[in-house]
Length: 535
Image (tube, rainbow, N blue to C red):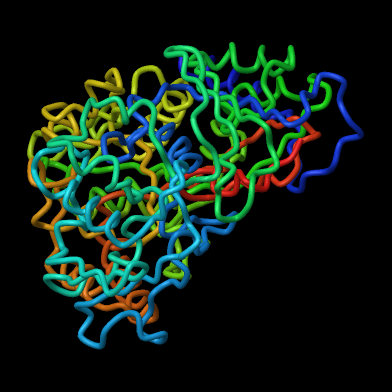
């Protein structure tokens, strides 16, 4: 009953807010500080060097301070930045054997101290990532490189150990942008040096001030290759509490909140001078199955659960409709997207599937097979109120087909710990979120060789045919061929149901109506075009 009562409250919170699709220009607000935009981040970056952080806040500050090979615009498309042309087999920048990928570097890019950015910086950064002296958050992708050759000062060729199609995204936004060799090459390690908190970059802004635990202040980089940015200052305030964030909007101490918590969207209508928009982002909610568990190793049971769950109802009731129904882990805006259909909601078919699998209803309605009750658990982060409400709905729907589902939530740090329920394989079902990258490569999520502790396949799923398709997609650069591989792999997975991909998130942004040029991206960071912002 307490879950039902909570769900009713949550529905009331999220159902009544007005959210516009297209921004409109405000007439001017008396509280606007012209030339200054104030943001909120829920967490403070632990460093300003991206190779040492996986935080979303690190992606944002990196976009301000450094120039990646490519940025990604409001449709997720690559925008040439430090690199001038996106490599492809058609333009000759990818060799016929797929082992050499060439990047032409922009000649007019300078570090903020006036030194030119060159091929030496790219090579230095790769060696810093792979040299073993720096505790980088990952080496995936960079470990596919055999060598990087400086063709001249402003052109580099990556020589691969084997064809690896995601290599075109290395050194780009969301990845590790090049660092200045002329400043850092004298250090044995780059970790915990003064540069990490006060870097010289080549991006549109420079760090002006960092008050730890409170705010970061950025000023325009006068040497930025696109020209001096239009803003005088960007202030990022560190505000972990979502209620405080809305209060700061209400008192006009913030100009932008990017990703308003869904239950708080209704509060925004009462705030003058705030424009509220929504846009799809590459965060997808999924219901995972532990495919190595004694019960859920049965494909029929996983298929029946997928048939029993009314995903559209969950999206509307729990998430206020601020989501787009998903089918696979490839976002609809991706060049690799397909037209596959999700599992149909059909409780009658779920009952039939369970009957055929030998699960018969007992006196209390819960199904039994060979003396074993059909009892499972579902887990999400304990502090996720919407997640708990979704779990309550799922439990109700599974009960209707004879499955007893118990909710067993954990603190987020425990749930995702190295030896926690997910990576330790000590769970049945999990209600969690992933963020998709710019490339659709997903072998590490579903491949047989990537079960923990060797990777992130926490579904413990294995199908060699799926492996073959996903591996082929890594080895070819032709997008049409890769799209066919992903579609073929997902046709199999939609039948075997290692997970149910639930929705793509619609992020709600609240912004000062005087702000112009702010175009949220569906991937990586909304700070991709900060040099164009005006207020």
